[in-house]
Length: 267
Length: 204
Image 1: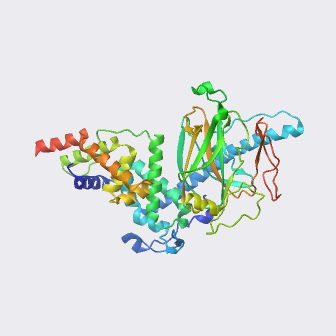
Image 2: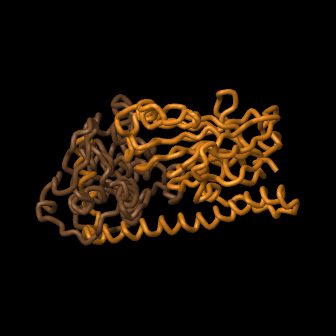
């Protein structure tokens, strides 16, 4: 190979080795893959249902004073329930084992809420990072290169819903940055703001990256699990009220359906 | 994301002009980045017109026919549900999704892909020297980092400009330029290509 013309010619020759598939095979294959992906989502939904039950179990004992049987969190994207606060899971991604950060391109075409999730081992020494406490560990979400959200990590054996405090809601972009109807949902972001901030429109791919950091610097924490999920149809914006180091999800303010009874995410 | 309402029926009749030329402006409309209504090819039209080229690109990226088909198929499965909402240039969008998918496969090493010195004999016609050249180039491509390989394929196979390549890879044109320059420098000194060139020179 002596110049780029040679390179072009050789690449063309190599590419010609590709067998040709009829268009209908591509289309049939696409339908098949979409069906499989839906089925995977439903399977994930089953695991998520177990998680929801586990969360419910953490609530019921407070009422019945009975014993609960903890259910370990599901693997992979199953950490996110299929339905959350009236919303439906439309896309989710969690880190692979040992993955310190990940990038993801999500295509969203619906009003969307974002839920960020992070669990980390309690014992900092087990990470090989002496002097680092879990309280310093944050999961950071970036959207289209902009820092969008930072959340503290829960401990590794935390059962229940992912934290949903300060959730952000995307609504269909109408070209206007209209004021929200009710400021009661002060933790709800509006589409106009989002479109401006991230240069995003419904249906366009959203470049998402998630990583762990401590005091503003990226860190690798083996065993940490973290991820992000997008939900649509979330009707409420439950707030995470922090007091004395514990969090509770407040009752809905508007009463138009919602998450059901509040619960303490820390057993 | 995968709502039936967003999935077009498969039993669409494919217009003949879709077989002949791209871009096909046959059905559907979408708003461009400035909100204007623009005609949009149907997904089926796109598949008919562009699958071959996408598959060729995918083969150069993955260096494996099955993986290439899987890469294109996975890309279609990702873009299909959102097809009617794609604005501006569907091909650029599809390429971008395909390159992102390829990069994520490469990052996760799901496929256990390893560079190889030799390709299996595919029975294709061609002189021994040409076959060695191709095998050498494929081995050399396999030794490039995924990003550089993508730049080489997009720039020198798909003939995209630096700006177009940058859009697909979501980076700056300057980055494309430097990646291409580094990739070419590596290819020029790759032993597989030097050997095949040397052997051809000897036998000539």
